Length: 405
Ligand code: PMT
Image (cartoon, rainbow, N blue to C red; front, side, top):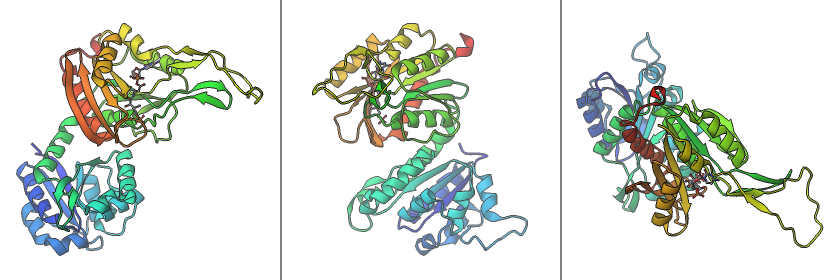
């Protein structure tokens, strides 16, 4: 399965380092060429000789211990990797990666690599939940680094909770799906809408909503990594534009509608994850409204329904709608799916903790015309994005591409 692939395995100092030996063995058995870099801490748990025997390659522990004068090891490894995996990843290496530190062989090679990076954390539950670790992991996710989530259970430190290194078999599934996913949307044109549109009242005031854009940006970044040509039509957010994605900034629902319709005919897939304002002020003042009366009545009028328009106009395009609900999730979601003629509808109950607006995670149910396709439990928006893209890719296999229209 991994024949011809070069994998650099970074092992850091935690008790779970022994599981990395099993992972190294599985990678080798799958046909990969494996090169191991250990931190000093990792060598306290498992010897380099273990990894050397399993990988049949020299193990690197020291940036300055150059084994071959014709090469600079950390650059050579960084360049050769098809995938760089850090397992187990301590809170320390995650922090170094987030902040760009390069003070040993592993962190230096990670900073030098252009290869995709996968991180399998393992640490004490409180370290995992610490705001600093969470912020560091979020920074890495936004840079496109993939995580293999740790398991919940008895930890070596005595605590019970989240922090156990994922089993080598689970990490292998993540690795296999990474190499497979790369091709999933190759040649497909995908457009993603994200963020909350803003509807001007006057030059300094507007109506909007709490959408941060995180869900849509995750889909756009992951779609690009899955080989698609991606356009992100985004209303206001504070997020960096994902690498490789064409970016179109819009403000109002009407702007978003214009930007999407201008591209719609050439698209294969549209994700309507933006939270579009349903109403806009009838009047938009060209000067700041002065405070005068006790009451100020603003008349609102409906904005165009972009998703419904796409549903009416679509030919071969695969349209994925979203629904943000606080009650009657299934009934409202299925009604929206039918009314707006979507191929799939992703419904999130935004009243649940960890779901919907602003947070880094989401919980959703995916529907098609026949009912529930899949329930997606609490997970990072990045992981949800990847799963949604897998579901879409499977369904696209039976549809002609835009070039055949
Ligand atoms: O951005 P985050 O902070 O990460 O939060 C993610 C999210 C909660 C915004 C996202 O997961 C989500 O649910 N997006 C859709 C929110 C929404 O507007 O839901 P709705 O039920 O009001 O609309 C249903 C669908 O119609 C949506 O696909 C929406 O984009 C679309 N719509 C709505 C109104 C309108 N005028 N035009 C539209 O296209």
